[in-house]
Image (cartoon, rainbow, N blue to C red; front, side):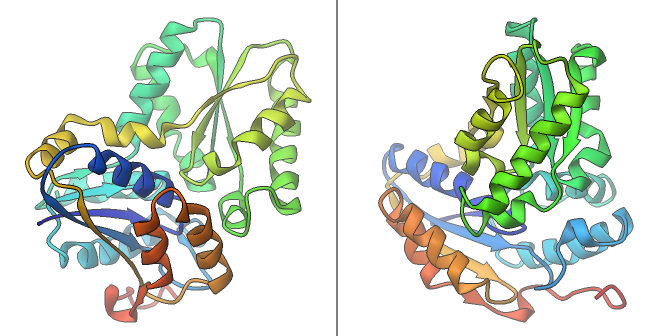
Length: 297
């Protein structure tokens, strides 16, 4: 049985987990253990709330030691924020097992779209950590996309409120605020694409279109890169080596996630990927999943 581990901070990566399960179902014979590893470190503090990049690296290094104890055949970092942190960690200490993070496949996806549609401006949307890093702008410029065609906007707190519902007043308020800010940055008649650089953001596709269409003269093109991480040749090779859609799905976290959130997502995925829905309802919670560095929390 091959073990594939998806690492995220929160529940946004469940979208990628669902896509992966559907992909595995279509690939033949074999058996897989799919682990969803929630690397959220503390009930009152996520990675974006830590003081600086050094603290983020220290905490995720500890979390990744927990990942390694599962001895995965493949690891997907299904989170843009953690992908950026992981790049810094891996530059010092590469992983002993294959890892794919979001930045490379997402950047390739965005760049290809911009080449095919030279009239587009791209608004990069993400968490504070993702936008502050400037990594997607840098990657796209390196790929030959003019800096004049790029803009970035942080959406603080949006990922968190999306876990309570995809169409709540809080979500609407934050996406409406992002559209208002974008209107001040980009002319209203500009053909616009939105790069959703947080795995949570795709859950609110309808609101992104509605709120931005109200500020710009045409509905924006949404670029959700969540599927791009699953198209990488290294992962495809791993999946093809062991077919048979026998899939065991498990969810692990240091602490219990709010029951309302787990039930909401379990119900959302129930009719699509029941294995994932069941894993959410039977979540494994253990503070020893990974040990937090001293002096940070």
